[in-house]
Length: 151
Image (cartoon, rainbow, N blue to C red):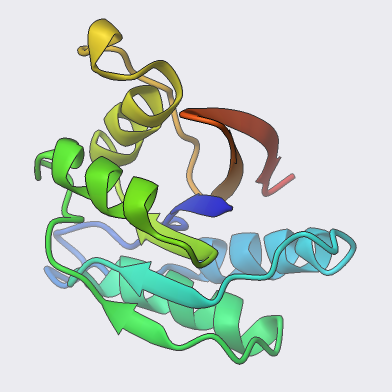
C-alpha cells in the first residue's frame, strides 16, 4: 500500500520563507489524524517527506499523533517541481507500505502516473492540503481506495 499525503496549510512566504505549518495546518493535521485512527489500514512502514519544512512537519504530525513506529525519512525528488516518474518507479518496486508526504503539482502527477500509467501522462489528480490518499496494487495497476481530508 502507498499513502500519498499532501502537506497541511503553511504560513505565507512573506511571513516566513521556510513556510512551516500554520496554526490552521496543525489543526488540519489533528483532524486528519483523528479520522485516520479509525481506519485500520493506515499502517506505513516508513514515512517519506520532502526537504521542505511543511512536508517534514506534516510527516512528524502523522508519526507523533498516530503513535507510529515507522521512521520519518527525508527523500530527494519530492519537491513540487521534481519529476514524479522516478518516484512512481521507486514506489512500484517497494514491498513495504510507504507514506509519501509531498506537494502539488508533484503529488497530483504522481497519482495519475501510478493509477493510469504513462499512457495518460500529463494527467493530474487535484490534491487538497492535508489529504491522505490510499493506493493499493492489483497486479500491475494501482487503484485509489480512499481519500481522507481535513473537514
